[in-house]
Length: 175
Ligand SMILES: [Zn+2]
Image (cartoon, rainbow, N blue to C red; front, top):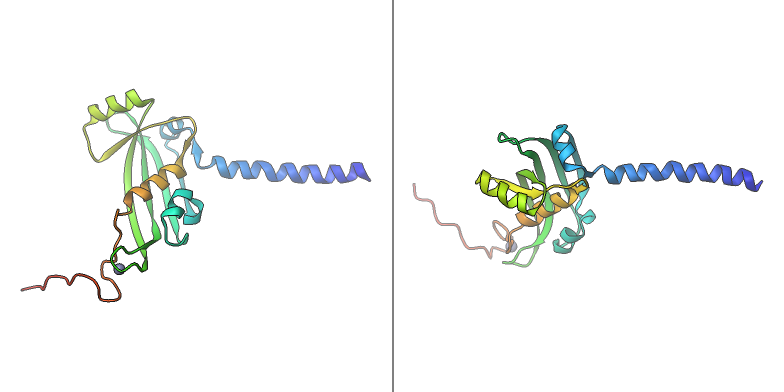
């Protein structure tokens, strides 16, 4: 009886475990191989799944849609194209009411092997539209997504127009 129970339980346990690992490693990639092989990843992650972002948000609601495409910069460097869009609940700094802040950002990330290489690559490229990052064999894509969203959030988020009418009136259009 005991042997039978163990025999039943163990396979269940081991069947579950690798699946979970696969889900986790799906967003942790060998950055250089990812670019070389032209791989892609895309997903949707709830705001609540990002610790730093959830701490910034008024409410940990909403979700972030993200995608990565590996490739090569025209000058030969390994390159990641990242697209991030979604919405996060922030508090308007003018009227102090919560509102949904939407963003949609595309970035070109060029990989360097270490900090010194990153500095040299940055200088060689001299291109402000490209971000040079240090790649690794275990690059956390979701961390890049979270960094991107945090960067896109304004320091002082505000409604385009506050619902209580407290906004600065737009200048009158004269035609
Ligand atoms: Zn407001």
